Every structure is written in C-alpha cells, then in structure tokens.
Length: 424
Ligand SMILES: Cc1cc2nc3c(=O)[nH]c(=O)nc-3n(C[C@H](O)[C@H](O)[C@H](O)COP(=O)(O)OP(=O)(O)OC[C@H]3O[C@@H](n4cnc5c(N)ncnc54)[C@H](O)[C@@H]3O)c2cc1C
Image (cartoon, rainbow, N blue to C red):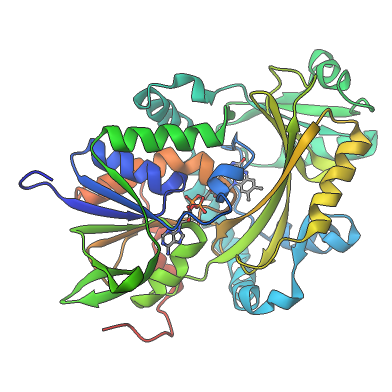
C-alpha cells in the first residue's frame, strides 16, 4: 500500500465482489478481497451465462403472483418452497406480497430498466479491461415452445411484455432447424431476442477477474467474515480466530451471506436463498453458435460453454445450507431425455443460491449506519447481467461520486432497521 491509498476490503469473491474489487483497484484503491471459499462453487460460477437485459420486470409482480400456483414443483413446475425451511422464507414471503403491489412493481420496473440499460456496454468495457473481449458474446438468445398452443400463448405474452432494450421477433426456420437437428422433437415455435447476450463461460470470467485484481495490485484471501461490528462510528470485520480487520471502506458483496453481515450493524436485509440447479455434460452435437436457448414450457435454459452444455432451472426457497433436493437434478435429466438434448456423460450436478430481496431489486449504496460500508448484493436472477455495471457503481460510490443512473431505489434502507441488537 502506498501513502494516501485507500484500503478497501471487499467481502465476497463472486462476480459482484470481484467486479467491485477490479473497478476499485483500477481507481487506485489498495484492495483485499475476502472469501470463505466453501466447497460448492457459488452462483457466480453455476449460473446460465445469460446477459438478460430483457428482464426489466421484477419478479415481485402481480402477474408473477397470480401465476405462482400453476408453477409449483409438485405440478411439474420450477417453483418450490421447502416446508422444512419455512423459517428462511416465511418472513421474506410477507414482504414479497407487499412488494407485488402494482405501484411498487411499476416503480421497481422503471429503476431496474435503467440499471439494465447499461449492462451490455458495461460488460463490453469490462471484457476489454480484462483483455478478453471474447468473454462477452452479443448473440442474443432464443426462447422456444414445444406445442403450437404454448407457442401462441408464449409469443403473445412476450409481445405484451416490457423488454427494455431487447428487441424480439419470431424465430426463423433456419434457427429452429439448427436446434431441431440436435433434438428428438422440433420446437413448434420460438422467439429471437436481440440485444441480449451470453458470457462465454462464467467460470472463465471469474478466473479472469481474479487474475486482473491481482495484476492490478489487489489481494484475494481465503477467510470467512464472522461478523461486522461498530467501533468509534466505523464498521470493522471480525474474521476467524478473533482477527479484526479494518478498511477505510468495506464492500459487502457476499451474495446470500450479505444479509447476516448487514444485520450485524442494524440493517434489515431480508435476503432469501433462491436456489437453482444445473446439470452439465459434453455438448456433443449441440450447435456451436447457438445462443442460450430457453425451453419455456419446461422453465429450463440451455447454454453452451465451450465443449460443455449446461441445463439450468428451478426457484427453490430454502436455507442456503440445506442439502440439495436430488429430485430437481432428476427432473432436469428427465427434460434432457425427453427433448433428446445432446448433453452427454460425464454429467455433473450443481446447485447454488441466488441472493434475492423481496422486491427483486438489488441493494447498492452506502450504509446509513456505517459510512465506511458500501453494499452490493441481492442481484437475484441478474447477478451475472449486472456484475460489470455494479462494479462501476460501487467504485463511483467509494470515490464519493454519484453513480448514474440514479440508484436511490436500491438503498437497503427501504427495508427499515434490523430487529437484531447492534454489536457495539
Ligand atoms: C441456476 C442459476 C442460474 C442463473 N443464471 C443467471 C443468468 O443466466 N444470468 C444472470 O445474470 N444471473 C444468473 N443467475 C444469478 C447469478 O448467478 C447471481 O445473481 C450472482 O451469481 C450473484 O453473485 P454474487 O457475487 O452476489 O454472489 P455469489 O456468487 O453467491 O458469491 C458470493 C461470495 O461471497 C462469499 N461469502 C459469503 N459469505 C461470506 C463471508 N461471511 N465471508 C467471506 N466470504 C463470504 C461466498 O463464498 C461467495 O463466493 C443464476 C443463478 C442460478 C442459481
């Protein structure tokens, strides 16, 4: 560390933490990233790789609420609430219902749309800074349906939907032929989304980010942050074995682990683990240039990463630490068999948690409790999409600048204060 350099401690080496760390290092800060590095790779590694700028409508919406019953796992859908884990999602669900009110939904959609509008340009800047422009593929994505009825209903629904800067049109016969050749059944119809994209491999993106943080003079350390506490008006970090760490600034970007840390200093941070599952196998003869394909009847997205093909699905409300539900992998394997998807052995299984707040908006801002704490978490289904833009915003906040677009809708203060005692 050189004289006058700000020392910044970033908690979390997922995509959000690493993007923050790199942007901060490039802005001249002395950065240390802490990650507990649990045995299971985080959501930043296991996601579907889709830069989903079309998802401007928060899932806390009147429409999502009315469709929920028909989407339950028990009826073949992707949505599951683990009863054994009701303590994890019960209080969250009450706040979710409130957030579905039409006026809150409309305000949230406007704020999210503005945030998403810079997601692809921010990824372009990031990929270029990483020296890996090939990480970002601006090839859109496809949505397909298996029956004429679901295709007609699905296309009509997308035609009515707000999709931000993404543009869509019916999928042409050439594209349908491409995937039909690799499937048992030809899709009955589809939509082509333009303006969206893909990260060529989330695991490679994480590695490239780690390398760049280190090249920029930063450090990545394996350590679990046990708690945040206040000391003389500033927050400090307590690590294992009573090691206390302080930074001029602390960035909380620990995915689902962020809620507990922020509650330590008095914020209500009603975060839930919205768990997803994927299976991944050899891509065999899946078309090399196909973008991510959503099989909407099955709520499953299929993405090619190099020689591997990944099929991902499910929204399971549970404790982050609960054992995975093997039935979900079995369901994914059944989809693969029924479609004839060329996802060949060796097949690997993964599950991980999306960090989700009740209104399906992220939390990005400076803590009103400890001015040296900046938080960036709660990116739900859009953490890969919004990682680059979030990093830039956090670097602006850390320099005392006002990020653009306005991020006041993402303040954690919107959830009030924690009922927990603030550690002195
Ligand atoms: C199946 C699935 C598919 C998805 N597909 C997409 C997609 O296509 N596009 C998209 O945009 N998003 C997608 N997402 C969502 C996206 O993956 C997440 O929003 C994103 O990864 C969140 O990143 P993060 O850095 O906040 O959290 P994480 O990736 O969870 O990283 C948090 C890190 O913090 C560390 N940590 C936590 N607590 C502590 C602590 N106390 N001390 C030290 N370290 C700690 C953890 O070890 C972890 O490494 C998907 C998610 C899932 C599950």
